[in-house]
Image (cartoon, rainbow, N blue to C red):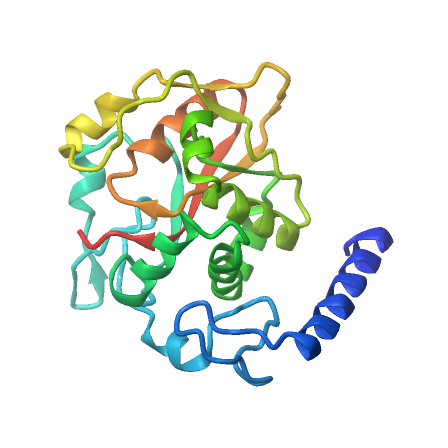
Length: 256
Protein backbone atom coordinates (compact mmCIF):
# COMPACT_ATOMS: atom_id res chain seq x y z
CA UNK A 1 0.00 0.00 0.00
CA UNK A 2 1.19 3.58 -0.65
CA UNK A 3 2.38 5.51 2.42
CA UNK A 4 -0.18 7.79 4.16
CA UNK A 5 1.63 10.92 2.97
CA UNK A 6 1.40 9.77 -0.65
CA UNK A 7 -2.32 9.02 -0.20
CA UNK A 8 -2.91 12.47 1.29
CA UNK A 9 -1.05 14.19 -1.54
CA UNK A 10 -3.04 12.25 -4.12
CA UNK A 11 -6.33 13.21 -2.42
CA UNK A 12 -5.42 16.89 -2.44
CA UNK A 13 -4.22 16.66 -6.03
CA UNK A 14 -7.49 15.09 -7.16
CA UNK A 15 -9.53 17.61 -5.16
CA UNK A 16 -7.66 20.54 -6.70
CA UNK A 17 -8.05 19.03 -10.16
CA UNK A 18 -11.80 18.66 -9.66
CA UNK A 19 -12.05 22.30 -8.61
CA UNK A 20 -10.07 23.49 -11.60
CA UNK A 21 -12.20 21.37 -13.93
CA UNK A 22 -15.27 23.28 -12.76
CA UNK A 23 -13.65 26.64 -13.46
CA UNK A 24 -11.70 25.64 -16.56
CA UNK A 25 -13.22 22.62 -18.37
CA UNK A 26 -10.54 20.25 -19.59
CA UNK A 27 -10.05 19.78 -23.30
CA UNK A 28 -8.90 16.81 -25.32
CA UNK A 29 -5.22 17.17 -26.15
CA UNK A 30 -5.87 15.61 -29.56
CA UNK A 31 -8.99 17.36 -30.91
CA UNK A 32 -9.42 20.23 -28.41
CA UNK A 33 -13.06 19.35 -27.69
CA UNK A 34 -14.30 19.63 -24.10
CA UNK A 35 -13.81 16.47 -22.10
CA UNK A 36 -17.02 15.03 -20.70
CA UNK A 37 -17.18 13.36 -17.30
CA UNK A 38 -17.37 9.92 -18.93
CA UNK A 39 -14.61 10.56 -21.48
CA UNK A 40 -12.10 8.52 -19.53
CA UNK A 41 -11.97 6.34 -16.48
CA UNK A 42 -8.91 8.23 -15.23
CA UNK A 43 -9.24 12.01 -14.77
CA UNK A 44 -5.59 12.49 -15.76
CA UNK A 45 -6.17 11.15 -19.29
CA UNK A 46 -6.86 14.25 -21.37
CA UNK A 47 -7.84 12.31 -24.48
CA UNK A 48 -11.53 12.00 -25.30
CA UNK A 49 -13.14 8.64 -25.94
CA UNK A 50 -13.54 9.15 -29.71
CA UNK A 51 -9.85 10.05 -30.02
CA UNK A 52 -8.82 7.09 -27.86
CA UNK A 53 -10.70 4.91 -30.31
CA UNK A 54 -8.53 6.23 -33.15
CA UNK A 55 -5.25 5.20 -31.51
CA UNK A 56 -3.49 2.21 -33.09
CA UNK A 57 -3.07 0.27 -29.87
CA UNK A 58 -1.16 -2.98 -30.22
CA UNK A 59 -3.43 -6.01 -30.32
CA UNK A 60 -1.26 -8.27 -32.51
CA UNK A 61 1.61 -10.66 -31.73
CA UNK A 62 4.82 -8.80 -30.87
CA UNK A 63 8.31 -9.76 -29.85
CA UNK A 64 8.48 -9.69 -26.03
CA UNK A 65 11.98 -8.19 -26.21
CA UNK A 66 11.69 -5.37 -28.77
CA UNK A 67 7.88 -5.14 -29.28
CA UNK A 68 8.21 -5.46 -33.07
CA UNK A 69 5.35 -7.26 -34.84
CA UNK A 70 6.10 -10.93 -35.36
CA UNK A 71 4.29 -13.41 -37.60
CA UNK A 72 2.11 -16.04 -36.04
CA UNK A 73 0.88 -19.18 -37.75
CA UNK A 74 -1.10 -22.08 -36.39
CA UNK A 75 -1.21 -20.42 -32.98
CA UNK A 76 2.60 -20.34 -32.80
CA UNK A 77 4.44 -17.00 -32.65
CA UNK A 78 7.63 -17.07 -34.71
CA UNK A 79 11.00 -15.63 -33.69
CA UNK A 80 11.78 -11.95 -34.19
CA UNK A 81 14.17 -11.26 -37.05
CA UNK A 82 15.35 -8.01 -35.46
CA UNK A 83 16.33 -9.53 -32.13
CA UNK A 84 18.14 -12.32 -33.94
CA UNK A 85 20.50 -9.78 -35.52
CA UNK A 86 20.72 -7.07 -32.84
CA UNK A 87 22.34 -7.46 -29.44
CA UNK A 88 19.75 -5.63 -27.38
CA UNK A 89 20.78 -5.21 -23.74
CA UNK A 90 17.33 -4.79 -22.22
CA UNK A 91 15.34 -7.87 -21.27
CA UNK A 92 11.87 -6.85 -22.47
CA UNK A 93 9.85 -3.92 -23.79
CA UNK A 94 6.25 -2.81 -23.47
CA UNK A 95 4.76 -0.60 -26.19
CA UNK A 96 1.28 0.89 -26.06
CA UNK A 97 0.67 1.29 -29.77
CA UNK A 98 2.01 1.70 -33.27
CA UNK A 99 3.78 4.96 -34.17
CA UNK A 100 1.31 6.11 -36.80
CA UNK A 101 -1.83 8.17 -37.16
CA UNK A 102 -3.12 9.95 -34.07
CA UNK A 103 -0.71 8.20 -31.72
CA UNK A 104 2.19 9.55 -33.76
CA UNK A 105 0.74 13.06 -33.50
CA UNK A 106 0.42 12.75 -29.73
CA UNK A 107 3.97 11.46 -29.33
CA UNK A 108 5.22 14.40 -31.39
CA UNK A 109 3.18 16.66 -29.11
CA UNK A 110 5.13 15.40 -26.08
CA UNK A 111 8.26 16.92 -27.60
CA UNK A 112 6.86 20.46 -27.40
CA UNK A 113 4.15 20.33 -24.73
CA UNK A 114 5.68 22.05 -21.69
CA UNK A 115 2.59 21.32 -19.59
CA UNK A 116 3.11 17.59 -20.06
CA UNK A 117 -0.56 16.94 -20.82
CA UNK A 118 0.10 14.66 -23.78
CA UNK A 119 2.98 12.84 -22.07
CA UNK A 120 1.02 12.22 -18.87
CA UNK A 121 -2.08 11.12 -20.79
CA UNK A 122 -0.11 8.56 -22.80
CA UNK A 123 1.49 7.19 -19.65
CA UNK A 124 -1.91 6.87 -18.00
CA UNK A 125 -3.12 4.84 -20.99
CA UNK A 126 0.04 2.73 -20.77
CA UNK A 127 -0.53 2.20 -17.06
CA UNK A 128 -4.12 1.14 -17.69
CA UNK A 129 -2.89 -1.49 -20.17
CA UNK A 130 0.30 -2.71 -18.47
CA UNK A 131 -0.48 -2.30 -14.77
CA UNK A 132 -0.51 -6.02 -13.98
CA UNK A 133 2.61 -6.75 -16.04
CA UNK A 134 4.55 -3.93 -14.44
CA UNK A 135 3.43 -5.01 -10.99
CA UNK A 136 4.74 -8.54 -11.63
CA UNK A 137 8.13 -7.12 -12.63
CA UNK A 138 8.53 -5.52 -9.18
CA UNK A 139 10.31 -2.46 -10.56
CA UNK A 140 12.77 -0.83 -8.13
CA UNK A 141 13.75 2.30 -10.08
CA UNK A 142 12.30 4.26 -12.99
CA UNK A 143 14.46 6.37 -15.27
CA UNK A 144 14.28 8.04 -18.68
CA UNK A 145 16.49 7.84 -21.74
CA UNK A 146 19.02 10.68 -21.50
CA UNK A 147 18.57 13.99 -23.25
CA UNK A 148 21.56 16.26 -23.63
CA UNK A 149 21.16 19.56 -21.78
CA UNK A 150 21.57 21.49 -25.05
CA UNK A 151 18.64 19.66 -26.65
CA UNK A 152 16.64 20.10 -23.45
CA UNK A 153 17.29 23.86 -23.64
CA UNK A 154 16.29 23.96 -27.31
CA UNK A 155 13.03 22.09 -26.79
CA UNK A 156 12.17 23.46 -23.39
CA UNK A 157 10.72 20.10 -22.41
CA UNK A 158 11.86 16.53 -21.76
CA UNK A 159 8.94 14.27 -22.67
CA UNK A 160 10.49 10.93 -21.59
CA UNK A 161 11.34 12.42 -18.18
CA UNK A 162 7.77 13.63 -17.70
CA UNK A 163 6.49 10.17 -18.61
CA UNK A 164 9.02 8.48 -16.33
CA UNK A 165 7.90 10.57 -13.38
CA UNK A 166 4.24 9.76 -14.02
CA UNK A 167 4.75 6.00 -14.29
CA UNK A 168 7.00 6.08 -11.20
CA UNK A 169 4.11 7.63 -9.28
CA UNK A 170 1.85 4.80 -10.36
CA UNK A 171 4.44 2.18 -9.39
CA UNK A 172 5.25 3.91 -6.08
CA UNK A 173 8.88 3.63 -7.11
CA UNK A 174 11.61 6.29 -7.07
CA UNK A 175 12.23 8.15 -10.32
CA UNK A 176 15.92 8.69 -10.95
CA UNK A 177 15.03 10.36 -14.19
CA UNK A 178 18.46 11.75 -15.05
CA UNK A 179 20.51 8.85 -13.77
CA UNK A 180 21.79 8.05 -17.28
CA UNK A 181 23.60 10.91 -19.02
CA UNK A 182 24.98 11.58 -22.49
CA UNK A 183 28.65 12.45 -22.45
CA UNK A 184 28.18 14.74 -25.46
CA UNK A 185 25.45 16.04 -27.74
CA UNK A 186 25.42 13.17 -30.25
CA UNK A 187 23.99 13.62 -33.77
CA UNK A 188 20.28 12.81 -34.17
CA UNK A 189 19.31 9.21 -34.90
CA UNK A 190 16.75 10.23 -37.52
CA UNK A 191 17.78 9.18 -41.01
CA UNK A 192 20.50 6.78 -39.88
CA UNK A 193 20.54 3.13 -40.91
CA UNK A 194 19.92 0.44 -38.34
CA UNK A 195 23.64 -0.37 -37.78
CA UNK A 196 24.52 3.34 -37.79
CA UNK A 197 22.04 4.02 -35.00
CA UNK A 198 23.87 1.56 -32.74
CA UNK A 199 27.28 2.96 -33.70
CA UNK A 200 26.10 6.53 -33.16
CA UNK A 201 25.41 5.91 -29.45
CA UNK A 202 28.06 3.33 -28.60
CA UNK A 203 30.00 4.51 -25.55
CA UNK A 204 28.12 7.82 -25.37
CA UNK A 205 26.22 7.20 -22.11
CA UNK A 206 27.24 6.96 -18.47
CA UNK A 207 25.48 6.40 -15.16
CA UNK A 208 26.02 9.20 -12.67
CA UNK A 209 28.57 8.28 -9.99
CA UNK A 210 26.18 9.02 -7.12
CA UNK A 211 23.72 6.31 -8.19
CA UNK A 212 24.07 2.83 -6.68
CA UNK A 213 21.86 0.21 -8.32
CA UNK A 214 22.71 -2.93 -6.29
CA UNK A 215 20.89 -5.50 -8.46
CA UNK A 216 17.93 -3.16 -9.03
CA UNK A 217 15.21 -3.89 -11.56
CA UNK A 218 15.10 -0.76 -13.71
CA UNK A 219 12.38 0.57 -15.99
CA UNK A 220 13.56 2.87 -18.81
CA UNK A 221 10.96 5.17 -20.36
CA UNK A 222 11.29 6.57 -23.88
CA UNK A 223 8.79 8.09 -26.31
CA UNK A 224 9.43 5.91 -29.39
CA UNK A 225 11.11 2.55 -29.87
CA UNK A 226 12.56 2.07 -33.36
CA UNK A 227 15.68 -0.09 -33.51
CA UNK A 228 16.09 -0.06 -29.74
CA UNK A 229 19.61 1.39 -30.06
CA UNK A 230 19.06 4.23 -27.56
CA UNK A 231 17.43 2.07 -24.91
CA UNK A 232 19.94 -0.70 -25.50
CA UNK A 233 22.91 1.59 -24.82
CA UNK A 234 21.18 2.95 -21.73
CA UNK A 235 20.52 -0.61 -20.56
CA UNK A 236 24.14 -1.54 -21.17
CA UNK A 237 25.48 1.12 -18.83
CA UNK A 238 22.78 0.38 -16.25
CA UNK A 239 23.66 -3.32 -16.19
CA UNK A 240 27.32 -2.44 -15.98
CA UNK A 241 26.52 -0.20 -13.00
CA UNK A 242 24.90 -3.10 -11.17
CA UNK A 243 21.28 -3.34 -12.36
CA UNK A 244 19.85 -6.85 -12.38
CA UNK A 245 17.62 -6.35 -15.43
CA UNK A 246 16.17 -3.57 -17.54
CA UNK A 247 12.67 -3.20 -19.00
CA UNK A 248 11.66 -0.59 -21.59
CA UNK A 249 8.30 1.20 -21.65
CA UNK A 250 7.23 3.39 -24.58
CA UNK A 251 3.92 4.79 -25.80
CA UNK A 252 4.81 4.00 -29.42
CA UNK A 253 6.67 1.38 -31.45
CA UNK A 254 7.53 2.14 -35.07
CA UNK A 255 6.01 -0.31 -37.57
CA UNK A 256 8.70 -2.81 -38.56
